[in-house]
Length: 315
Image 1: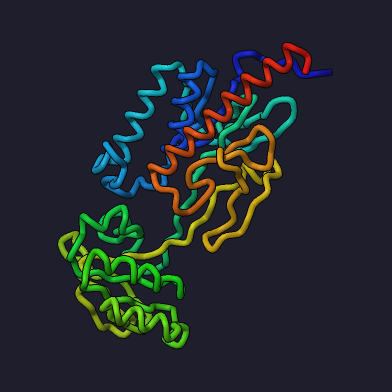
Image 2 (image 1 turned 180 degrees about the vertical axis):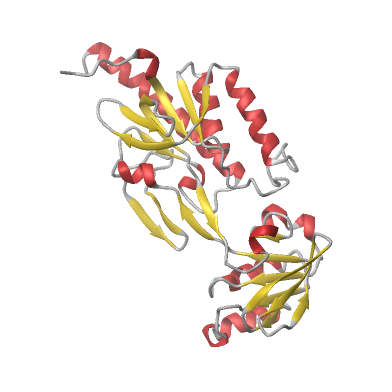
């Protein structure tokens, strides 16, 4: 016996994730007169930051304000938003999305914009200061801390690149090797670091020095302290691909984790399922995520319109 489908639980598109990518997709879907639902767990990646930069016309806006404006905008077009978490999704004639609250919603098309989580090194003080004076992206925050005393905490040999890049914003950069052995650095690495004026300090980092709620230094495990006012670190990216994996989406390995294979619109290898934002890559900034959500939504509108017309004419 076929389950009777409640029309009020069937959406043209369900967007899982209420960050920049998800809200952008929802805005376009709503303006196209599509019935859309956003499922938002309320865990944006950039929540620790007081502001976001480099987004034309929104430079300096707080992430919280940006999302609040986005939620208000999608509501104008009848898009629904629920604070909930999608825990399971299955395919079929329609996608069934099970929520943590116990509700199940169905969708003709699906947008996965669940982002990623940043895993920080277990150095005392790093997690507590992250987004304030412990940073990861100079393009996001470099201008605001320009010419300060930078530290770069290595998490792998690849951190050499981060130390070189941040030297564009300050000529006072110290590269703390932490768990990276000196002999792991190539001759080219050392020459480039020297050319950039980056000081290399071997030895494990024991913690950060904080005074009056302000970062003042980096303390090595041997007790030596180096005065620094800003520390850059590269978190380990953990893509949130669980729902995509449940649907059998193909993933590809990158140095920053496994992400779904997508085309230029964000369409995954699962028909009817798009992905956008940090769900497709580590380096998707807010402006990229919003653009990705827009592209996914326009593709979905075209797909649904043509599908309905083909059905009407019997193709």
